[in-house]
Length: 371
Image (cartoon, rainbow, N blue to C red; front, top):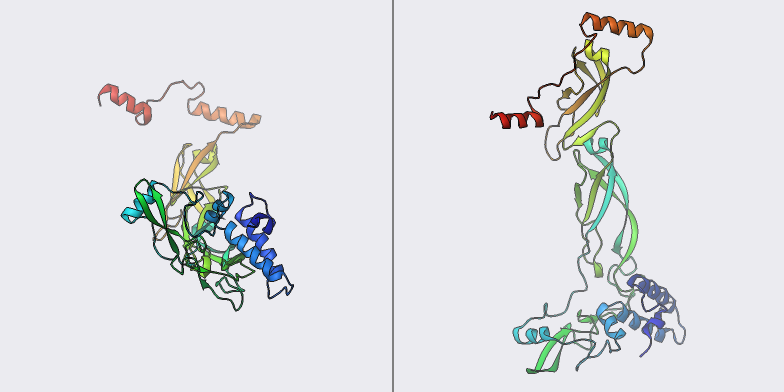
């Protein structure tokens, strides 16, 4: 038996992708439709046989252990035989019976997409590039070379499984296993497509349009049916899931459909009251600061928050007020503040802690007082 690794020109620890690339390169050079050399056809068959074994995990393991991956019967140490096989033989186990379909559904795919808060609020359309498996253009997903056909497996005669009689402590036991020559498909691809190596699909990059609805939040997944990977043998494509990652906003913090922002205002504006313009998602909005406003107060703008996903209405925008105490003042400003303090009787303020009627301290006081 030839050294299949040497035939493909790969190391014994080569990955499946490395073997596929090596096979594609050799197949293009040796394919009978391209190379009419005397030994090209024979080498093409040898390369195809090597790839058929090494690309199949079960056949590769059997080959690495020194067994014959195309063996049709008898006890094979590489194939293994245990109590599970006996149970399968007597009680009908062993999984799916009959040939497996070469045409299977493709895998789902997941990509993450960053959006701004404004895009999440009002929705947008984005073009994204996706690397995925698509149907091979050369063979249109069939996996065969031009003019070639899939043929029935000569070992299992299209059944996809073979039966063998093996000795056990219970006597002779007949077991069924997936056919090692066709890997359970029941058919063989003697002339695989050189472009896709018989898989019926190739990897490529293409652009798709993603519609982001208003109100999406970080972690939301948008399902795009049939936009995932095309399945082997030209099977139907899986789905693509676009997971939304929301970027931090410099002004607003989001909690569900509620927005929070902090507005810093001068001490004089807090004491005298004022009308101020602030930025919202919809543009500038005027808010009224009442005279005597304290630091930590909140002004709520109804309906200025985030839209509700797949629902009507919007949340609110909560503006948290922070009163700014002047740090550096000149002599005139200091004189005016001292005059104000005298008018209010605050030249010598008395220190004292306030009684808490709510919060942690209030709850502790109520618990001990029996309220």
